Length: 182
Image (cartoon, rainbow, N blue to C red):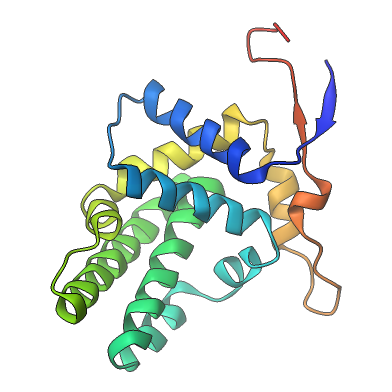
């Protein structure tokens, strides 16, 4: 099996998301597919630590205490954290909690966007309505891309005193497909 460094993280994750959606027969709006791809890219970079470190209940509480634009951003971040954690790391008994928080956060963020602009956010509405389906997409995309959970967990579990390294700098992708063909 050949292993090579991945130089186009967005392209890599987009391919994994689209393939996982195809396998699950999940249709979604383009905006939602791009949003989920961008979430995976963020998780692979140094920004991903913010999604993985704070307890969700604290994130949600802080978001709800904000007003206007701050609330929408806080709810989006909470939904993103819930989606990333449930799709990439959660044990089966944690998924229900993450799902409830994520649906609530994305629905709230969608309502804030619509209130502010008069237009609904297609991606936030779809994520709020179909959160469990996108949890499965992230879980399958992780497996499809040989993005091992142990590597991602190691990144997320680094102590605050240690310098955070970008996961993308240590991510390598197998060029062999699941059926053994290169």
